[in-house]
Image (cartoon, rainbow, N blue to C red; front, top):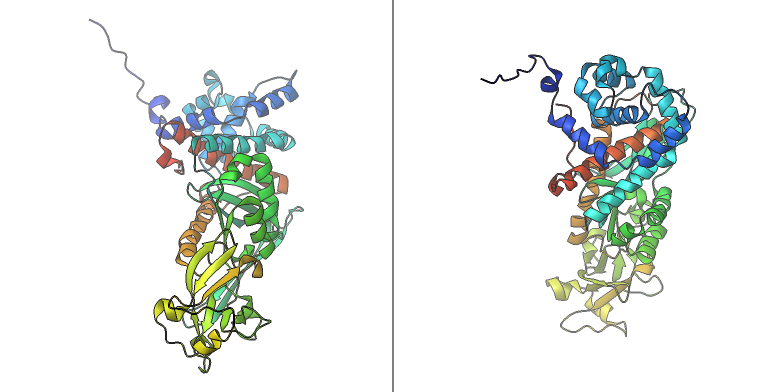
Length: 445
């Protein structure tokens, strides 16, 4: 009669064995870290190898994956969790003695700073993997800046950043909120459908969002030209409201800028509406947000009662113009200014009504290939929230909400690792044929 071998009652293979550990193994498998490891080994050549570089590197990635906010927390977990040590590559026979002390990690991070180009190359390698596996990855983009506060005022690389938010309450009164922080800023471009990063920069907190957009787009074209060629839209909030950038995105890259517009007409006073053609007297006006209107009631007391939005008929790409139709003919609106409209010799006012074409070049800030006040713009602009969700994950999942990072090099390296892990998790799911889970996150059980 054969005997059945019984496992130990408190074996760590059973206690700590988990789907999370298996997921970590798959993440480590997809990381394109060969060049970094070779560079580190070349630097260490001839010195003792008590703590293998691959194992230390894998444990650093494990710390990011499982949300350890400090090296001390990572070391405690490695000493407790035998399976984690084994997956990272530490000698299982040395048990807790295989775990490096904190000074080893300090020296290892110094090496990562010296080889930052290989760490960043991993990010680009993973972006390329996703590009090859997801035909629509990069089609719709979103961009935003995120505060990275440092919790110590002695950080010599950091400075103060300010961001303001403004809007109107339901009763029409304006509101404004101003936030300040000391530290850095993450400028991030993400895929708006998969909610995965595409490009990024880490700067001092005082660097404004808008001036960094086009340099990031140009860098993206240099690193991933095929990916950028896929891009059709780029969504951003009012902080990126710049006419020159909007024109360059569309003319140079073929990307439709879905950027909210500040109503400068209203803010600068003098009335919300402006004549479409300031050189001639006409009934057609436009607002500071690009809404094209006809003055149908010229003698109404309130300005908002004088104007009615014209019927938007679409964008004529060949002409580079937005097409609008008379609201009286399109909607049956009563027009008390019809004769003034007809007095212009170029106006053909038949049953279809007057047609007005507005070239984008009239004002690249307010006139976009997708009309700002249209339902299409509102639908596509909602994709901008993808970058907000990615920023939230950076904070809550990858430890930037409560961190101990000081110095721009350290902050940049820590951001590199967080975004690399985010992409590696996505690649690991896709390679398993589970594309629908590409943006799923690994959390501690």
